[in-house]
Image 1 (cartoon, rainbow, N blue to C red):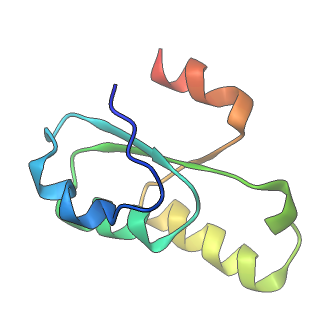
Image 2: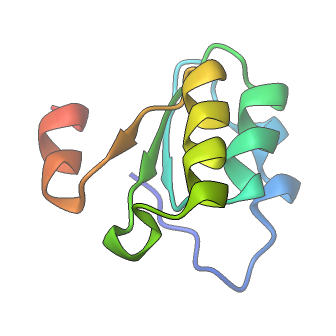
Image 3: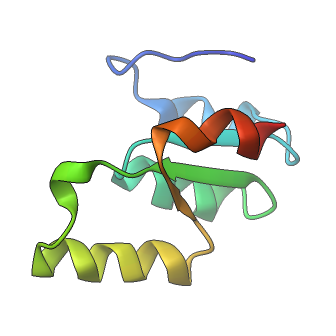
Length: 82
């Protein structure tokens, strides 16, 4: 497992990732870019409780679902990776 901090533009490294890798991140455009550049990768977006209920965020969540990027609770990450 490799951790890339939030000060690094992950889009720079995405092409170097193995196609069967798993990418975990927040709800951001980085997840969209990763899906585009690595369509076979398993991508998980960590759902933030503060985003729930907002109409704009509901549309964003639908977009993630359409791109096969499941939103998971922080507590679910280890289980999803296992």
